[in-house]
Image (tube, rainbow, N blue to C red; front, side, top):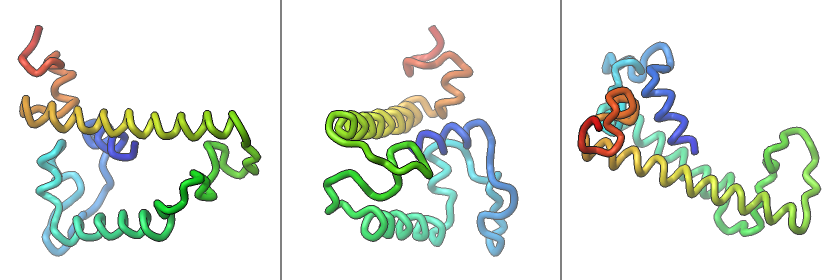
Length: 135
């Protein structure tokens, strides 16, 4: 879900101010939109992203916890969660389905960009939503 939100923000040209790498002179605004922006990030930045995701997966939210309760709530911050039974199952199923939909969304945007050469925002702006040109 974070990938989809990040893609939408970056395609809308909402970026952090300042430098991504001050030594290399790369500003956040210098990173191109879409999948090609990944290849513009310095190796040290990609390594930091990789290790941060690894720490989250292994230490903060371990995959060995099958209960789905990672202590961060079910959409109600600062409220004790006392979900049980059908309500708990419904919330967990909803979370899994929304995660799957987000994965399909980012995958579809990446494939569409590789096929058409346009980011999702450029496809919407040009009416090129089926990948074969304007209708």
